[in-house]
Image 1 (tube, one colour):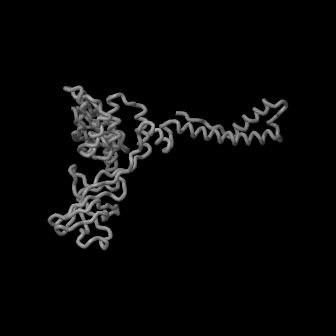
Image 2: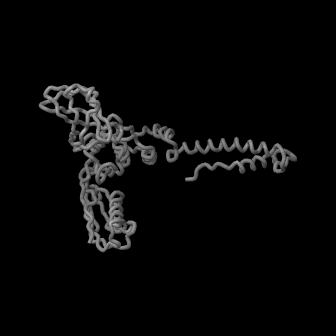
Length: 366
């Protein structure tokens, strides 16, 4: 889209000289030396400053081009704001004598220096104590796998008997310290603002549910909405994310989306919404006669195939099965850097029913 064009100083100066010539009898502003030339240059400088200001204002008028502070203002008018950074939370367990009390406020560190705070005092039971932990800094860096060891910072300042090392416990969904997220980047927020402008609320249309999921789960990339074949008032909803293997959301993300879309504030009164997890269906691929068959070409082929699954794969819905075309894989292999020829042995065209999501399985070569 073309923006506001700012004229050059030369063009503005020439225009000013023409105005002098047209407005003042006998004035010949193009002949040196005269004060009209000087005045024209001064006016050109002033005029260009105003045009630069107008260009900046035009940029802020549109959510697609606005700078951060004004984009946030666009979002505010639509009831949207950038998602703030979130601190990872969870728990850890360490050895301690029975009845020992670990005070709140102690800090433990991961091997790479990320720090976690003990949120509440805890009393040991048996020979161990479980501590509620929160990352000291709100960011995705605080997310920590279960089983990771954390070391007590400043043990000399802690009561004697405090565990000097604890292990991150697994949560119900298998994650360890989780929920940490970076502040939403400007382009992600811009996409949400534009989506909201292009898809205004319509009382429960598919675009409404998609927008709600995107608001509830910042890493959601695509949302699929349908009604159940045997109950038109029951809403079937699945989505994919960018921060989980194969794009399949975690149990926590499913719960967050379910709670958000089921809130009576936004859910249509008669609708019943069911957010479910896509079921991974691995697709194994066999390639014959790859030429040249080198490690670099294989790496490129696998990267292109993986990207195709990210871009193309989606779950089937209750009303429409998803057809995964073998030609997409052929195309992906042919795009690989260095590839001259190949033969895709399998799979052929595949069809996936409601809730089943094709994901990349193994890649074999003959």
